[in-house]
Length: 301
Length: 332
Image (cartoon, rainbow over all chains, first blue to last red; front, side, top):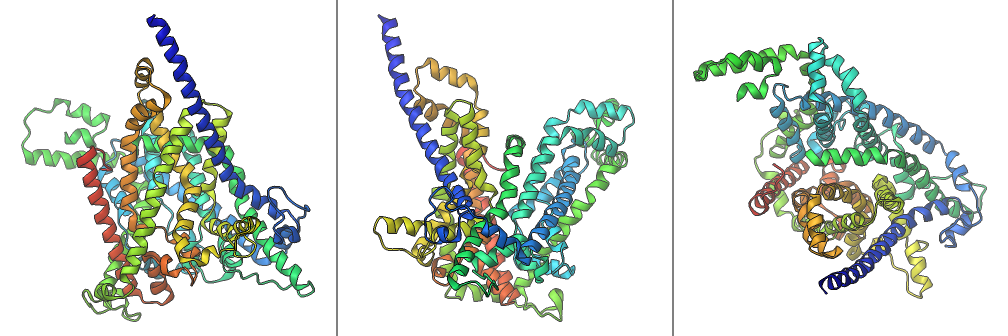
């Protein structure tokens, strides 16, 4: 009697659970669609014909496949310059940032490091209080970095959050025994970092590289306030001026007015694709490392 | 105690002979001696941290000194330190400014809306993702929901503008299709906050959910077994095991959110601004930029920025203290 009752109840519950689970699947599928749709729409528009885009005929897939937008894009000097500049800023900035972050995060992870707690407080305080926009601008100006490439590489080189994540990784993933063994063998600290710590820290280095690189590639604010010459502008600033401020700045005199407008509209979609694709292509391959790194950071952070 | 905190392995061995009673002065001396020995032994590590420390001193701490500009009338020729002191003049000017309350209101309303709408969604998303079986679908959901986080602010705003464009934007094409009039979304001050907040949720919910997913992975598995034995349904399990398990994480994220109410991101607001929606979209950060860098009114803008930083700090400390008392979880 009792057995029947319990088994009955279990079946009933699992039916309710199954409906609940089905409901979750439906909602998650809807969410995936909501996230993906705008992205697909923009990619599709970028490879449709100018007329199809401006008459609102693109709904999901490309209409009248054409690459006019991209052709036009690469005919423009400012876009190419912006692209090359962004590649430079991303490479150099990431290199500087990752190096500096590891230089401070590793010593902070060593329990025997003298002044560790004080140093930790010294850097975390900058997370909750800052001098503000103008005082920082004055420092950069005082160092004569305004309108130089350095202004985008140095003033924001270290993110405290990245230091905290890297430090917790080193603390939890580099076994103390390795350090003891290498100390007995007379290995110096730098040698230990180079031949033991770094090879063991590939996941966290991947996370640091990804975060700094994406940050640098996507940044526009520092460029907006520190740069004046157009030949130093990163891609994001060019994007802003063409799409958001609507300075199409085109000089296609021979083309009819309507077509010119259509092309200007199409150009916006192509620009978005060109500016975002590098990041979105790399992302699925490094996502595994990324989630790992975030987990490490949040466990001890 | 002290030796343990600073000493390495070798130090502890040497101090093993130490008698129980050591006079204070002597202990202090030995503290500095071990410190010196430690630095000497690990000089390479201490050398390594010098460039990062310089970075923080120059680009984070020196600006804090520069913030005295707020109490001076900046004069280009005399420089920051030579300019005359004016006390709280700029603060007073700001408080008496007719725009003052509008700026504070806009900043708090936008932040508040963002927290109210944006805070629960990643939690719900994480709980839902946690329910489904590990497999391709789960991976796909995580991959997709995370992706918009990598879109830059400029591109995000470009997408918003293209979708909401008055004539050819997707939203208006759909409206027209169903026979409605077109709306100039970005020109309506009343719509500004919703556009900002919901596009932000679209972009960051998946990213923010990862933290909760990590917390959920750390919930004690025996609790699930107990819940199963007690015949709990999926929903009851979420309500009584999952949620209580991630409360500490929720509290910490909430503290950080509320503590940053005044430090609302400048970039996206600035890009979404136009003369039509400025009534609701001018926040303290954009005002500082406009007054300070565009109008070169350095002292006044510094005062406004400083006011903002201090309010923010006070808020963070208050919320943290409250959370400590109420839930025993805090950031420090």
